[in-house]
Length: 463
Image (cartoon, rainbow, N blue to C red; front, side):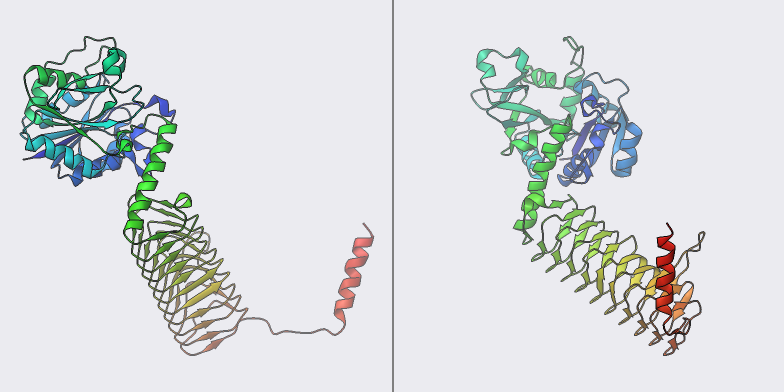
């Protein structure tokens, strides 16, 4: 049976008090509507229609071609929002999931169970429900003796018996697509808010003697809709716990989960240890047997096996197996380290490739460069890559030695096995196996230090 999804993402989200459109607020590094769309795709929805309104362009820019879009110019209720998809989906046969774009904690497992229950019973509608001891503000799900859903009653309309019910409507549904759009034609706005409510569809289907079921999620967190910053922080906390738990069950050691932030799309290999204070974001991929952190911030980077990274920042970098980074290193975009490389403290690397076995141990800047195998870059060495207008490339070939406090003025090449003496400023290429020295010859003036001190003291005494 064909599966489809309608994602409701047209609300303004005034309670967020933000210039950012509500469903684009991130939870664990991904906008909420991105979480929802990824989840419905995991349950094999062939078509996903996102109902947009406020901030429509921003939502479409983020989601791109992963969804179809319908503009709801006036927000006249959830029923009206779903009805906006009629031109795209109204003639389809199959099951349609309706879900809000601000419910990032709903899992694919729950949606699959909801849809399977719906399809196996040939139901007209199936409501995703949840249970809590304090369902204040939620519509209660009233069931018949056989367990089917009779109605959904908003709290303000509940009788004392209905108010005592602890099962509530999460706002996520699965419908028979044809019956959904047929029932929507019968929904009116004869209520205080003068809006068209999707919950009215349930009553219409029940009155037509259609089968309406309820599936209760085991995790109350999946019911959370994010309407303000408090709910956003709660969703962030719950998803962090869920993500950390998943990694730990997959063989990753997280020393202190409470102080570790791992984004939703991060991949980590088994037997890797993540130390406290570490932040892993974006599409980062980390191999097996690594030690990451403490206090490292890694975004959109690829890390090989057996890598150690301490107190460092990586952004769009690539690190080969058995390489060590840090403490206090900064790998900027297009930094590419080979295997068995050492990058030490206070080293910055940008748009540069450092091949296997090379070392940049401390206090250096390597930018716009190609560094070969088994190269030693001494303390304080710098590739001078920018003239104020243009960037230039430095090439350091295999087995070269770059002494401490060397400036390599790009464009320049240091040949294979060449040796650049400490303190040199290199402006011309160094041929293979040559020694380069570019500094003024030292001159000592006997006793002159006393004259310098006396001159300086006299100047100070005059003040």
